Length: 298
Image 1 (spheres, rainbow, N blue to C red):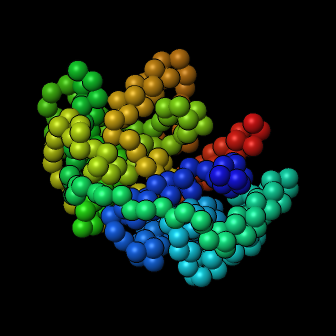
Image 2 (image 1 turned 90 degrees about the vertical axis):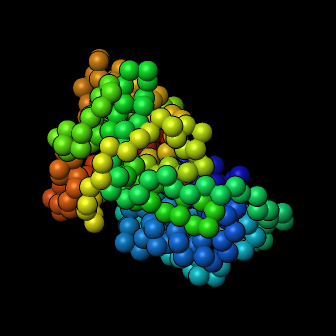
């Protein structure tokens, strides 16, 4: 896939945008409507850290599907400006490489793809939960973990939920009151990606959840319009790997200390706080830079 496959251009954000793009494309949305939705959801114009990654993912999706918009191309070209390269500016070696591969990518996507992707037939799967639902999810034969649904989305044929996990484990029954006393669950490492560190929040598609949806149930509901920003997290989650991620983290903590920057309680999570969010934004920048250095050292 050329420069798309290098850490300088491609990372988790661009990859996850592409996953979202494909799903929306297969659901019948036009390339313009997909771009509008992704731009609205990810707000690249407000994100100096990930502006280029978001627009790279959108541009790649439109190019793969045979219809790059001039609007998208303009935004992609803007990603070479220094104001959108704040994550790279401190590294004088990586910065020119980033600009170079962006320029090569921009040139590539302006040439039509010979064989654009065709849409796949999609079975209708709507979201299983609503914003504000507090749910229990079975993670093994003995325990459940409590989690908070922070959003739901449904199109004509697909749905998804954004879910944030707590550190409240229980064996049979629990109450909403108990969940509200807990903290947000943190992952020092995640699955095969040893560079992931962050609070466990992810988007799960209904299609991914359907085969094992029976392991989740409703505990209660909370009424809030906004939540604390926790960081990038795992943009696209895998419902089938929840137990693996949690087990790996618990095993990690038996021999190591967590390096999370701060503890976040559920009560803090249920309201915005500029001071806490600033700490988490700076932590996200640190992890992003470490990840880039690791990828490009290979």
